[in-house]
Length: 102
Image (cartoon, rainbow, N blue to C red; front, side, top):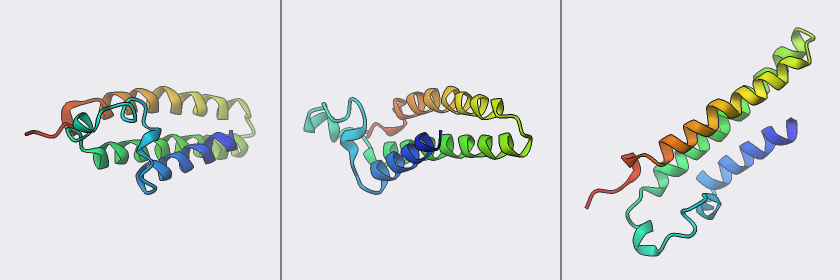
């Protein structure tokens, strides 16, 4: 699970700060004309926030799991983070909020 936490943090940072937008599925296959219609900085911020948020929830789960000496709790936090984070990421990043009005 630590690997997943580190992976989410690294991916979130690479997309937002490293401007590696090709990691965003669908965006990398768009034509230049279509890419110009989207606020990619806003979408990258959503990706960063979602990835960091999921990593944070997992990290809290590990801490609570060790604190309460219940190893099963970290699994609940892991899947909870994914169940909350992935739909959030998909819904917000695909909303019309990031389409530029021309």
